[in-house]
Amino acid sequence: MKVYKFGGASVRSAAGVRNLAHILSLSEGQMFVVISAMGKTTNALEEVLEHYMQSEQTQAFEKLKTIKTFHLEIIEHLFTDVQTGKDAIEPIFTELQAILSAPIDAEYDKAYDRIVSCGELISTRIISAYLNECGIPNKWLDMRHILQTDSNFREANIYMEESAERLKQAIDQQPATIYIGQGFIGGNTQGHPTTLGREGSDYTAAVVANLLNAESVTIWKDVPGILNADPRIFPDTIHIPELTYYDAVELAYSGAQVIHPKTIKPLENKHIPLFVKPFENPEASGSVIKASTKHPIDVPVLILRKNQILITVRPRDFSFVLEDGLSTMFNILHKHRLKISLIQSSAVTISVCVDNTRYVEGALSELHNKFRVTYNDQLELLTIRGVTPEIIARTTGNKEILLMQKTRRTARFLMKSQPQII
Image (cartoon, rainbow, N blue to C red; front, side, top):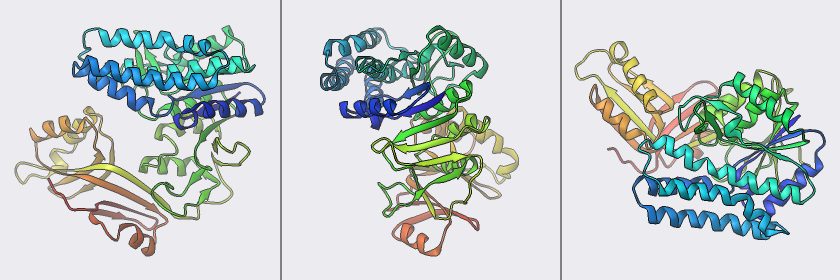
């Protein structure tokens, strides 16, 4: 069994779906194909959710209509029998319309998972139906009924043993060469949809590979493999042909967008290699992540994490914050689902850098009850592995640096282009 994962960019158009079919036609043996929502559908459904939660029903339905039109246009250019594609997605949009017509679910995260999870259902219904029409038989599986999770909506944790049993049962009941499943989604023990965290489709592929003892995982992306920097931000990027699980975890934790941070553990546990290959050139070698490599990474790696906020807390008196307040602070950040990407401490202050998400306001409010709190927003966190003075000058020269951490191999700079302290 091989596991393939196609992201939203690779299936954002009819041409992308046809290319997916071409890639599958080149492969032999059993395959489990994990697919994300098409294009920017997840973002669009998040807008639907915001309108719904604000009781803006008219705007929510208008946005949903735009999403449906986007998918119908793909269907029009894809299917010989267009009605087949329309029939595949109609039940999902009927369900979404029913959700938006009902009273508001007061719990945002639960409503998020119920609405936003539909993006993957739509994309996989279209692709499964198209592959069958093309003569590539497959079985569509509903991952809400296969990956059993807890009820930590928006970042659910998978119960591996229960999920393994459900996945085996689904495959035994529907023998096939190709299985089509959704990334990003699962379901809790009460049968409610859950999601695994933003960009969680990579993690889905890794979990499925672990549960099936797969030969490999291949993630198909719009880059030639793993690069030493984001080509949209930095010029003259360099291809990295191979790296270890340890390297991948370090890069993912620092904010590298190629691999989701949780993806590596299920693969490393069973020594399953992870390939990253360009979907526009399936014959290319791409990159591979595995237990060991012949050569260490010998080029600088630059990772820029945008939309960061630096939160600094001080005790209300001159007590030592590390003695009395450390656990309190981290418990509050964890409660509000804020992930720490950098920490700096002194005797009476501790500063943490986190993604500036919708949860920050609640965390700041609760921290204010116990500490003196200041923060800086509109920041960028630049991580450089293989740092040199020349690279530092080139990447940070025109920016105000608020905080810097440096070791022999790695430097991290929290900075902004224009000073703005709040």
